Image (tube, rainbow, N blue to C red; front, top):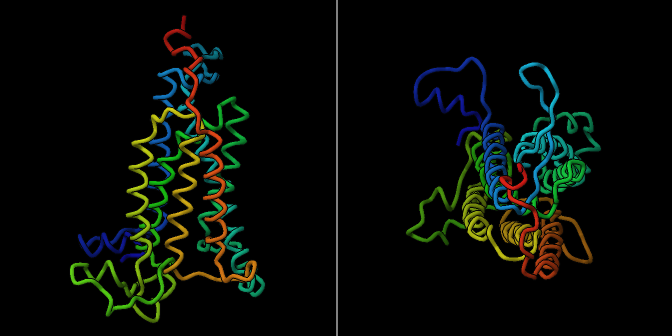
Length: 306
């Protein structure tokens, strides 16, 4: 467990880098690049098969003349990623503040400008709104784009959790019941003490829930990727992603440390409430889109060129 990958590099090779490389930031960057690549690949496939029309981009030729040509929507994924990251960071910070209002009241400036303290669901919701706004502006069908992004979003979430585990940022479980550990399971998968945690180690070994979430996200990514050519209407796969994402988070919250509040007479976490809403919304979406898609009416790129 290394909050800074530069420290790991030093321990392995004996070389001290002139600048620190933080584990969480590095893994988030890898997660974003992975989701971007997978989404672009899926958009290209849908564009080539005629499921998605092209977008027009302006570019200069060798003589400096501005020309417009039609290309795959995948060419805009880089910009959409920047929009998602920008909106996502704002949303993640806002949701973290809402979850920790007492701490915010004590030090509002410190919490606002802290490099830590982000909530995944805030980033997901704000990022989704930002990308939807940009896609609508560019004439990209939002349901098709959402389906194309779903598998990559699931895998990116798991990769980001590896960053949480390496950093020891507090996204861990409750104290582990050491007596209940199965003999066949390695101790590092059952209880972790996080001695180098960036926020300080927990008082007792805890369940490494970030590792469990990575494993679940990897499996669910495989499910979504296998179903990406589903026969149903656009939006069905993203609806399934919402159900699976909400179910995974709701389950892990049962053994995860988090602030609780009273909601309709129940002691719940912010993530549990949002997870249930995602599952309900996803189920409604699955039912709504549970019809076979009509044959693609968009001509293939080769036909468009003529």
